[in-house]
Length: 325
Image (tube, rainbow, N blue to C red; front, side):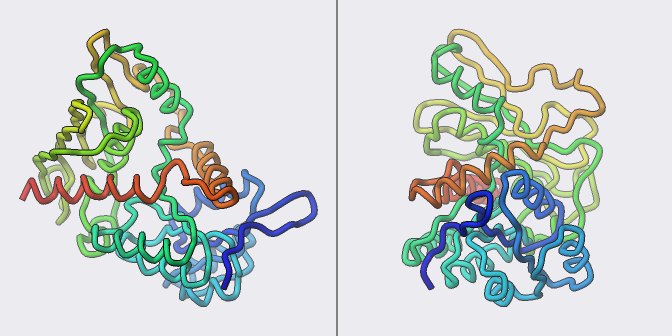
């Protein structure tokens, strides 16, 4: 089947999306797709009642248990993979086999071997694959990156980033080591890792060190606390704190402080004073992520959060787990 890009409908070009999964991330993507002026044509997942309720609430016409069947019935242009981490590769390959572009929630896959397989299949299939590192689309992050690139802080020496949930943490498949492929590092730390790399102009890691704790703040069988140190090929060192259920929030999700020879700065320096109605993880950056991905599919360029970017973030996570033992 050939690769489709968009369908022409009254009022302009509307891209048909489909979702694998029906949890929080799928809901955010569904809202973002609607705000961007596109449509969700199908949803898949194993729990019939939850999936059908998700579809009914959003008037999604196709609801099917299996990804391949949903893709056949819905005929989307793009599949957004929002299923458990261990399902990412299978769902993405089903889309590639159907000639459908793929946006995969982070982590792109559980293992690097899976990621390499995805890259090879995407290249052979001629489809675009992007990864849900959505903080690359946040206005404050982009503005801070521009300040760094302009030399406001001089030569950057070190960054300090956060990927922490304070006072709460996930449950379900997120704390299943087989389904998730890890814990707080692959869930939250990866956001701070990719944000640091994006701010620095996407350097390559040359060394990864880590200290990781399991069951420190909660009764889980995966990591819920830790620190990762990354040495980049541009000479900068990044320190990343990650965790769930922590009593104190040192920084908002993906918040990053930069220390340079001419000063220091931080994306959200006044976060402690934000009001109760502040929504850090806003649908706006998801909408911009959708718009960027659609443009990438139409023009043939790489999306801002490319498959290669997702691979590097995953490689750092896997190296950190290996380093911690």
